[in-house]
Amino acid sequence: MSKEIWRIRGYDQFEGEYYNLTGEFVSEDIAKEAALARFKLLEIVQPHTQSGGQDDLGIQDRVFVVRPDGTQYRFLPVEPEHFVKLQTD
Image (tube, rainbow, N blue to C red; front, side, top):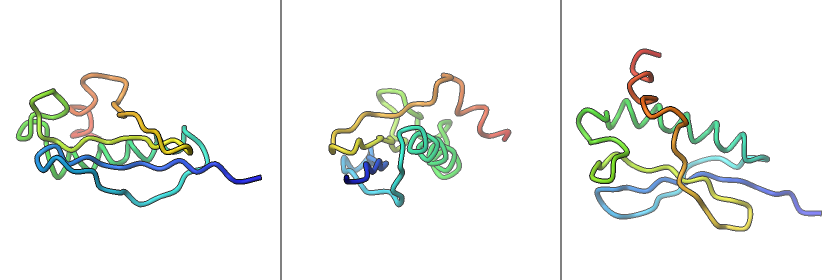
């Protein structure tokens, strides 16, 4: 039986290109934790106050969770004000 591997990938909103992120995860929950960690990094290197964040017109990179079958979905933190909170973590 093959092991199901979850991944995360980024999307450079400014360049319009996907890029792979390091890591293979054994569950969706662990992949989501990695995606959230990526958001924390993005908030440091591409602050929402300068990039427009995750709004439709924002150029902050996007994060996707990639399912074992290769399909993906965009991951967003649960709380809309999450990015503001990250600055004080």
